[in-house]
Image (cartoon, rainbow over all chains, first blue to last red):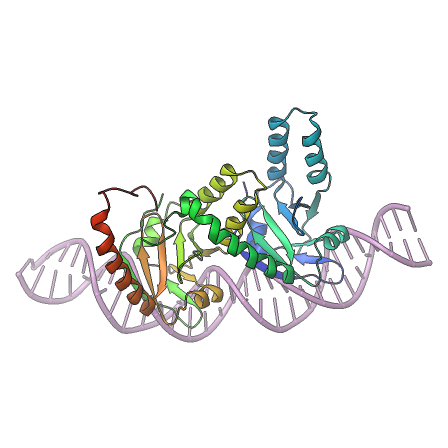
Length: 155
Length: 155
DNA sequence: TGACCAACCATAAAAAACCATGATATCCCA
DNA sequence: TGGGATATCATGGTTTTTTATGGTTGGTCA
């Protein structure tokens, strides 16, 4: 499955188009849909994206953990899957960010793509700077408790 | 997975390119990405590198230990994965060290690659000399108190 | 008809490939 | 064992390609 790393900031033009970073385009190049899938996460003012198989897997996971007609599961499915959009690349590798997404994420002229492994986030560039500061503090407290980071690189 | 040993110092040219030591290139030769992956560790003024499967494994471990939307997990993912870069080899075996990394690690004209097993570190050459002194002292005090293989499996 | 959207065209800047060279290290054979 | 031939490596500069970005055109559909 696609794997996303690193952070890139690009411009949104007045028609709502943004270049998807070339590294992310390559990551989804093997997907059967020439573009990315975007949805509004439940608890953050940003957009999340991935290749389509990520949402397929998320769906399977929801329907596995709960029954196929569980009420809580349906609410998550409605929020995530129902709110998702398939964003197709134009010939130059851009996508159209729907107005609704831009409003919900407070996206102005510049957006930041943040690779997070199997998925990535799209933030308003200024909002991301604030978010990142908070996340770095939280990560510094959290990481020592996670096995891969014990002793954090000081050998 | 790749294994890195020993220490090498190379020059950074004015375009930000550095030769990755041949031994490290060989170590990642079987990886599906022709290059290394670099990220800023949380508590040291240097860059850490590894082959891509190291971060893939880390990512999948994070998303496995916690749910896909856990807050603490996301903070580590943001710090490490969002701050990471895939550095591809050029035909001569060099990589471009992004400006942000060079600044955060205080990298000037010379960098030192330090093999640490599953990962390696990239230091400004002068900064590493100081760091090494401190680490050697600390190791000399600490080692007698450690049972021979305590911590052996942790990177 | 007018708003919207998808392809097309153009351009500057950044990144990747390309080519060249000196310095080591390695091999091979007399 | 010595020494020349050969390969590898680190390094520097130049050229080509890719990327991000902006605008324009033509079609579609309400």
